[in-house]
Figure 1 (cartoon, rainbow, N blue to C red):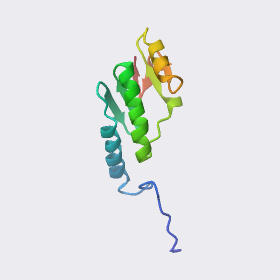
Figure 2 (tube, one colour):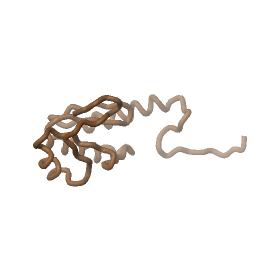
Figure 3 (cartoon, one colour):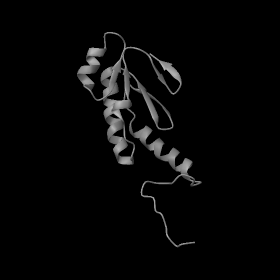
Figure 4 (cartoon, rainbow, N blue to C red):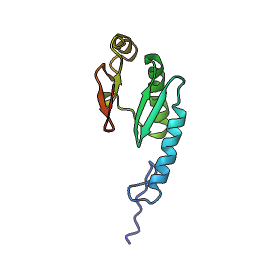
Length: 115
C-alpha cells in the first residue's frame, strides 16, 4: 500500500458497501423535506415527479430546489418537464417562466407515459 488516502467530501464512493444505504437515507431526507401541500410526489432513485395544481407544483419545485441545495441534489430545469392540461400552459409559463420545459403533450418518465 502506498499510504495515500482518497477522501470523499460528498458521502460514499462507488463500490462502498454502505453507498446504497446512505443514498436511500439521504434521498428520504430530501423527499420528506420537499413535501408540499397539494402535491403528490413519486421518486425512483434521483428522479422525481410531482402532480397537482400548477401553483402548487411551483411551490414544490422551489421547495425541492432549496432542499436539494442543502444535501447536494441539484435540480436541472433544462431536463425538467411540466406537463399541463390544455388551457393551463399560459398560467404555467407565467409562473415558471423559462425555468422548466412546458408542454401539453405527454412525455416519457422512467419508461411510463404521462399526460
